[in-house]
Length: 271
Image (cartoon, rainbow, N blue to C red; front, side, top):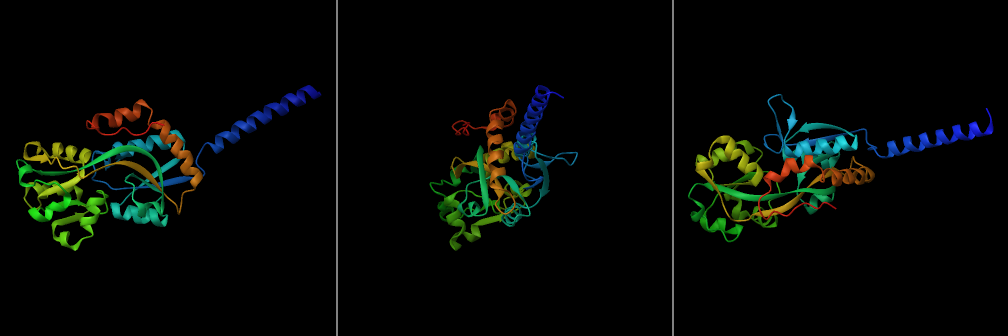
């Protein structure tokens, strides 16, 4: 072999090595990620008729990990338990997480990927019965609210939840599939949750003519994917954040979420 052939061969091997190195560095360092999720949260997270994990948020996270070429598996848990396991590293990530200072101590936050609007559903014709100017008014009207245990409904709700004065007015548990039944059966006066979830459940149950969405704005905020600081490296989070940015600019993303965005809802950052 002459020197020119040797040089050419060395060059090819060098290029191949660089490409291989780039390919490896472009994937996650962690071999597989466990995503904790709460079922019975249709259309955002749920099991379909084939017992496959699906939903708007699930599909988005699946697409992010497909683009990232990183392995993702799912673990169904109550929401409070999801957060507990992320804190301790037995679950690596979850979606649909609001910004909460306490969570930021044990989890990395991704780029925001959608907005949620927390509202209250009441029985048809009863909006005038509950003329809320602030959430603490529920005490003045003896209004009982039902919501998801561990969910973030904003600082105003957080304050009344911590106040024993309101304890008897709040029922918080993981049975989101039963909350609207309690409303129509007069076992609660209002159900608080994400508008996407509430509208879908109302239509699914066929109770559109039996309930109204109260105009009081409980809380609007961006949502994030959070990653356990105990089990996910900061470099993997940075890489996945870049992929999230790319995924938000795809037709797939807009097909998922645009039709659910209410007028006036801020758009997620595309930068």
